[in-house]
Image 1 (tube, rainbow, N blue to C red):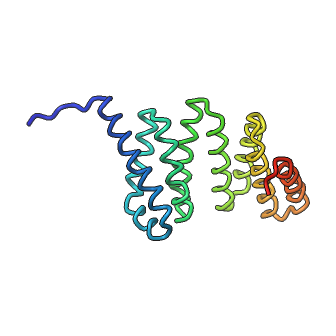
Image 2: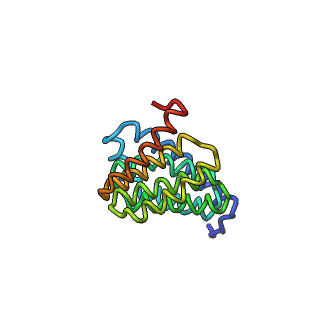
Image 3: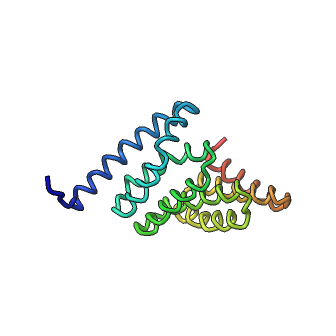
Length: 180
C-alpha cells in the first residue's frame, strides 16, 4: 500500500480526538489521587507532546482544557519543569488569541511555580503582571488571590511588614465579595 500524506484537516481531527481522550483520562485519574497519578505517569510524555501539537495546530480550546486537566496532576507529582512548560505554552496561546483571562491565570500559575522553586523575583514579576489584568477584568476574587500570593512571596523573604500590608488588602477584597 503506498504511503499517502496526511492532510492538515486529518491531523487537526486526530489532535482534537487525542486532546478529548487525554483530558477525560486526566480528569478521571486525578480524581482517584495517587493511584490515578501513577496511571497518568505512563501517559505524561504523550500529554506533553500533545500540548505542543495543539499549540502548533491552533487548537486553542483543546489546549486550554487539556492544560487545566493535567495541571493539578503535574503539581501534585512535583513535575515543576513540565508544569512550567505547559503553562508557558498556554500563555503563548493566550497572547495569540488576546485572551487576558487565560493570560492572567497562566501568570499566576507561573508565579506560584517560581515561588515554590525559590525564585521569588520571578514569582513577584509574574504576580505583578497578573494583578492589573484581574483588576481590569473586574475579577475581585482573583485580584484578592493574586494579592495574597504576593504577600506569600514577601513572607517567604522575611519581609513581614510588606506581607502584612498585602494580606490586609487581600482580606479587604475577600470581605467585600463575601469570600470567607
